[in-house]
Amino acid sequence: MKSRFFEYSHRINYDQSALSLYDFFGLYSEHQTVKEAMKGMKKKRAKNKGLLHPGRKLSAWSSFWGFPIVWMIAGAIGIILIDTLFRQLTAQVDGIVSLIFTLITGFLAILVYKLTLTYLARQSTPEISRQRAGIETVLGVLIGTLFITGSAFIIMALGGYSFQWAGSTDTSFVLVSSIEAALGAAIVEELIFRGLMLQAIDKLGGKTLALAVTSLFFGVAHLGNSGATLWSAFAIALEAGVLLGAAFLWRRNLWFTMGLHLLGMPLKACLAFLFPDTLLTVYLL
Image (cartoon, rainbow, N blue to C red; front, side, top):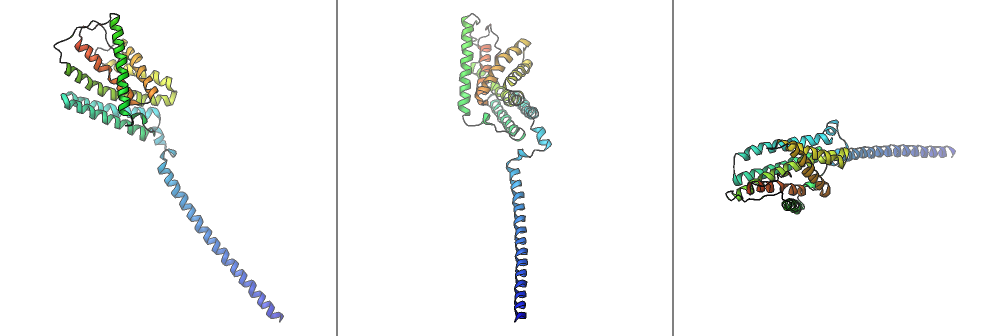
């Protein structure tokens, strides 16, 4: 009787040991499976995270291109190359074809700007968004008109203007030609000086430094104009450079500064061609 009891008890202990080993290895196997699955999920999550946020794992090369001065120079070079190429083409044609080339130049310059800010600077471009583009441009044109006409009337009242109508001048030709030239200059210069340079320097040294430096370079850039002098460059830097820079800091919208910039050249051309005896040299833009 006792031997049977020990045999039965031994069998129970053996079965329990076998069951315990089975549970142990089964649980271990499940644990390994879960562990491998979690590793796979972590790798997938890290990969997706890298795709969604490429800026978080920047290589040294990406960091170089993301430095403000670097992407500013890269974007400016791209815009200047496009402007130079199409300006040569525009000079060979007249009329509507010339205007079309100017519009193509502006479109490509804006495209280069957006690509530079998006992929090199890694920032969005709400300042050149299509939303409210028309409203901001018209607002800039209206404010620019008020500034220039108001100044003209004040100077005229003080005896600074002497008007004499140039009857032989083709008014429509003067107006169309000046608007065409102003359109290209407004787009290209605003993208470079306010869009790229001002924003890049603002990141490095703040708004005051950015406004001062861009105004200075804006005046220096106009030394290449026909009849330009140091005084005219200083006047452009002080008047147009500060005005347009402050306008951008106010609105944070390049369409607005383009509209403001657009008015200067056509009005200056009209004064020069339609009123040849004007005593005032207009240095605004």
